[in-house]
Image: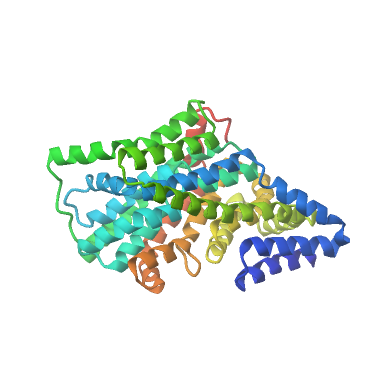
Length: 432
């Protein structure tokens, strides 16, 4: 009965609009007091503090800062210009550019919302100017932004690595092939839409000299993703230290190379990054005592028993887990899903032999799909505000692109090598 009360309380507090951090804290404190009086409240304080002291979590504020500095310092415009070089005069060309731009930008910011808010302004404006409807432009911008946290670096992977105590570097590598598959799936869906709806054509390839100038102007920005990966996998820096390198590099680009980042812009960006970091870290902090309460009340064991009671077949359990995560994604933000679902589902995944790195990719990919599913798809709200179109209109355009992303999710779930091959090949431990 207590287990059911905890789970129902989580759902109710979130549905009535209470902030995630407040809901988790109230439920954790309430459960502690109900089961052992006030004696356990000291554990709440201890666990809250301990939840924020993991070294990998230091990467979060710096990756957030790096993404914001790139948006403020002119990097996003140059990434978009380079992505545009690859489309030529194909029908629906700018929609394809949107996907390629997100693929590149995702290798810098690690955040879907940063992609939707930063690249989205440029992409939607350019697509509307070329004859696309604002609704279609907003839809493509929203779905392409989901690639960012799968392609390394990735803020959700950093959080998952801290929760699951697995290598963040291995998680970064595990996201490369799934991220490329997401890009390919969206490009194929856009190609079908271009053929069916007679989408505008791009004007064609620019002269070689102009293309070379565009690429050279963007070369310093394009060097950032390889730089991040190089310092990590060459052993020069940890993923956390690489996040500091990314922030410093983004600042130098905006301030001294592109000269679009004024000091007032810099301090405003630092303030906004601090605010975003505080929101994330508050949720992470209170999730630690909440997770302790779940374990103390044997909630994961109850969920494990229920899942194994449905079927002994791993593919059935994985299907149920994916469905549950997709439903959660319709109502919760990504970090809340990760923090609530991982301690509940991890024992079941271990029981059926799913490697934690593989499961990390599964859960984060589900979270990204959740960002574009109503009613609480955060990326939908971001692009809706930019394009000034109602979310209901965007939702009507989503179906073919959701099908593409769900197909990739199915492949990643049932073909583990898609996630595990690259970490194995580069020597990041033995992955099943």
